[in-house]
Image 1 (cartoon, helix red, strand yellow):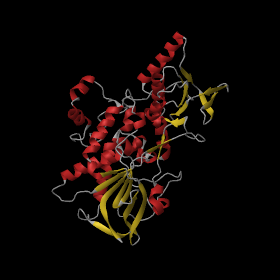
Image 2 (tube, rainbow, N blue to C red):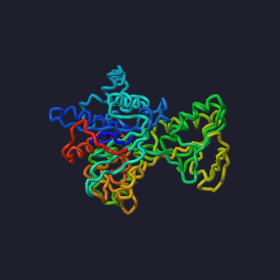
Image 3 (cartoon, rainbow, N blue to C red):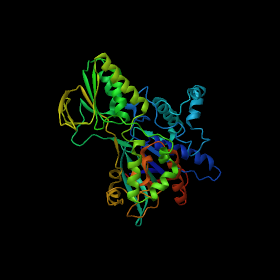
Image 4 (cartoon, rainbow, N blue to C red):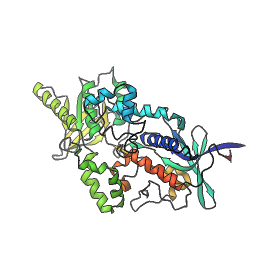
Length: 435
């Protein structure tokens, strides 16, 4: 039996903000090159049933930690109709936002912007469709195409792959998620399930922005419960969002970082880690301190900080043994929920690549080798390319998994694909494969 397999210049795996931004860049590129008659064809596969970005942490009061000008398009194309400002205009809130005098929108508002933009390009994405495998199609010794097999049994043929597989919640070694132990990415879903019960105590592990937001929300939502924050630092540390430090997020900084030797890369990450990692907005730090102080005055301490401490044992039942790093003293806490706000790790995309995965080149630390245009280096010749959106912090710097450089990055990836493209097949071309 034979089946028609559509051929695309690009097949994107995942449809989070990065590949959404790429879909927009493609739409704008094709609109601008209509006269040439050579559009770049693409389709994206997303396992979620609809667009979603960190839905479990869409706290109503939380704001973005990045300027609205670093949206999906503005740094690449300031005149784009897909900008956050155009979204505000379409939503009837442009004047209100201007009067707000704030660079940082609510997180729920920025998510709504993403959904608004995603709806404009939903003809190039299949939701509820997970990529299960990628098989190479050879022309002699060269990989000419990639056959992308999806969970619904469909297959797409790609000249180029763009992998936007996102981040995965990270739990410390030895910690297993369960009914009472979970990652902060599940926060709002878990809080909803806890309403109606009478939780007595929460333990929140972590010292970054998410940990502080979790502690504040649980303290608000459950006024009779104790919230115990456990972290190795002396206190929550402020994010370094000063003007000069923020230049680490500039597009030019990617070039500088990429060219730097490994010792310089390491130093830059240590110097400027506080711009993003284990750092909290000053306003939130001040608010949590006010709560702690107020409760001391009132004599009822619900927000307890176990600083310079670590959890040394956590059971499935929610029993947490906290050890002081200075004295060794241990405190046993019985918790209704233990929330780990311990960050994320990039998903390794190579298992999806099947036989090609082990043939992707890695450095001496086992990290993927990636060219400046975000292509994975391989030991086999490729007619197209395998591009990464995320997972390139070791080569391209701190903006790898952040929104700051997304608009610029997708423009660079698209330009690389256009520059490298061999004579494109006519739109609607199909390959015939045995099924």
